[in-house]
Length: 451
Ligand code: GLU
Image (cartoon, rainbow, N blue to C red; front, top):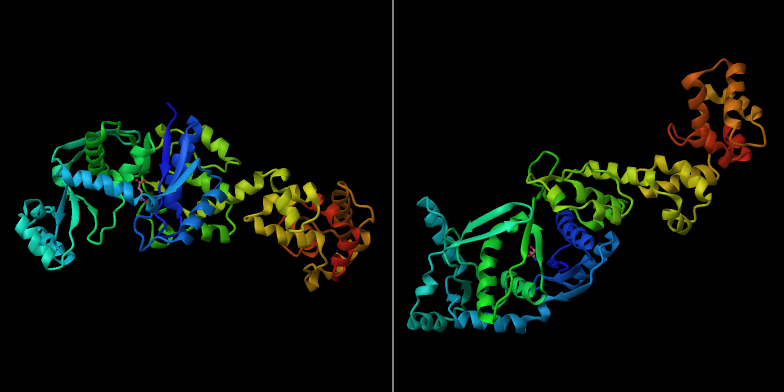
């Protein structure tokens, strides 16, 4: 049976690195297995969900290269959730509670002060019809809790191994808020059943939810004629370089921001697919390669360290290995001339793709070089000695002659030439750059003019 997975972001914000890692784990796994990737938009919180965030999430996933087989919105399925909720109410799985947020907060504080776990005391479960009617008459609207069994929910997690959640240690979860809106918990289970989800792959912050959701699956199966609980894979969370939780800034680092910084989507996927696994972090030139290399068995239990500096390095390495054909269109769109020769010459000097523009100017546009007063005479002499026909051999011969005639060597020979010709202290190999620059530009720059 082919697996079916879902990535289920809430459109209440932008996609950040943590969500993208979850999306990637789902996508890599299911693509490798030839299954289906469903994009579920968890927009039950209609007050905070926006179409703009939803569009942004879809744009970002496409930009990263993660396509989806189908997509749907939870907000289109309220009737279905209502029908299931009603059945759960009729069977006593869901019960009405009338406490206000302040009352619940006070109860938790009292329990904590008594060194007891802050578990909901199930007052709602034991209300009489009269008490309920009184609350309603006061204008209170009920919120609805799911009655946990108090037994242990167990599953064999694909990443974490055997898991046991003692549901007697949990508060009965609220599934429907006082204003009638759903928390994601029940709709998620209803949708996972309807979409025949085989694997729920998500961050380990959901482990406790899984204990409660397993009981919701069981209740819905009991009411609707059976079914099979999906497998769970809870992946370790991202932490910062120092091993501590992601800072607020890193935690909310969005694809928008990374795109604006000029980070390549494949650099993001290469890094997020590998941190926290037994594979080394390396730049990968295609998602297909990441798919090939994916295995749940490689994911460790320790948190995955996310380091922006490492992302920059992976990005640079990726560019250094990118063949011309992969960037031909982008170079042409930027109006960069010089074709493959130009790309192969400069790619090792790029941190971001945008750096191409600077090197394009160095090679293809009029600009002055940089010459110190001290080196002006030497550079003039170099201009005079430079032949008009430049090929791959020219640099070596020319510099050899200059060395002989001026007695300069090492840095004092090479650096002034590089600075005069490119305006920069570092860059591509000069023997390859010189033919692209051409004799006219080179001579003008060496002579202190614009070339
Ligand atoms: N919308 C939920 C979240 O983003 C989905 C969790 C899940 O994958 O079940 O946390």
